Length: 217
Image (cartoon, rainbow, N blue to C red; front, top):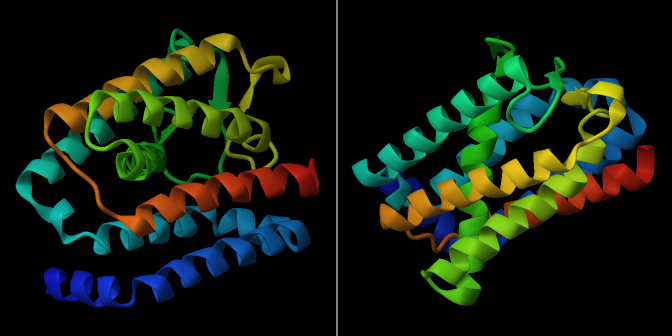
């Protein structure tokens, strides 16, 4: 069943990419015109993007890939729980309500987001640099650049906020270290990605946050 869906989506890959781009354009317009409604829909948009990404590559449903994704998910939740409750990782911050259900002051969706960012950035860099350690390093750097923009937008979208409104340098350093760890997990577990839709989702999300920053800050 999953293989059939994946093959169908691959057959109409350009159509799927077009829908993904349109989806994020509508999101930008929605945030700019009806901020409260679209912030409430943000968790659903995140899950939908994640599922679309997965369904476009049936190989992610293999035992090895599921194990890798699960490891990244739980490690990211662990780091975030430690970070938000002790401020020893990332810095002093608190989550808002926009990302949904929380466990120990940490939204479960943040783990899903880490998995999606790691996989989609790896998909993008592997197309350019191949499946090697340079790709791991570049993908980790891309995730930090992504976070540079995200940190400016997150408080506006009620995702999280920083004490005194200041994002410390420690946050970006820790982001890079953790991103490097997660990218290394993909590499060491031989999880390769040839997923054009995942690459497009990474770019669309980055452009989405840049647009939001311009429109509503």
